[in-house]
Length: 361
Image (cartoon, rainbow, N blue to C red; front, side):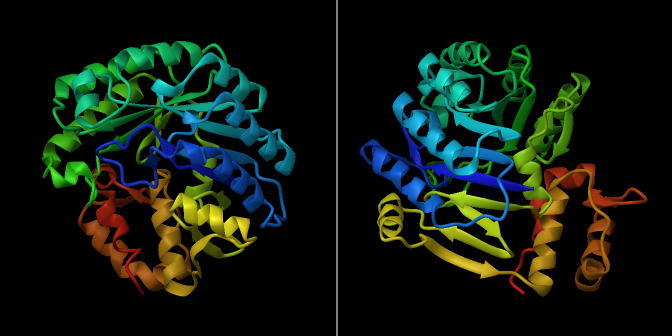
């Protein structure tokens, strides 16, 4: 399956945990950026039509209704429309009915809504631009046009207690979303939270995620990936394609892609990206073709994210048999008789598993 990812790097404000390519205060560049996206799409000749589209950010819903229509019109004209799954990320503070109507008319069939916490004090401590009331209002509009909705949540936030986390999760379940993405907070170097010296206890982090797992699975959700839960049939096809090693075209500043064995990443800066595309050049910050041990290691890492696991082939065993043995002994992975997969413990410490397969070779 081929996926299409489009990055919208604009946002109202920078959240205190965010190390993504997202830039507040640059809305004057949105129109030239969208025109550059259309031009960049013309630099690729695809052998097949994308089956899934994911528009992420940043905050895609910061675009005006007119700008959203321009974006969807060129995507549908270029790639034929009628996608199996078409996701658009929204933040509560920038959702309105006019935008949602245009998204629906433009073929979008899945909305991902960035909540992060249902507690106003916690939202303030991480620099979110919305509050709980904004989310409630936004969700009431979204459900008028879409039934396939994801809600993003983060565990182990500053000021968060087990009680506040679980009460927020239960409140979110009352909205009856079909998909929940639940991420453990990563305190990345260079972010405000890092500079503040914020950290959390691993035992507390695991306790939150284990409690969430019990609640979500009891409500009919299946955890099909480390950070993702879905009701039956609502799994993200676009993201599953990533985890199964499928190809995808990435367009936009900081977007990455994987086509024909080549992995690439675009310039993260908006101005540099636009300038390069307007010269008729691919806006590449890097490209590489993985082979041998490096390619096998990446295949293993992405396959472990998908919780059904995988049956290791001879190449995997040749390069990483000893690593599999070490991780089995450490209780971070398990063998169910057919597949290797993350253990219950390994789900919460997956980076320790991944590090065995992504080191420079």
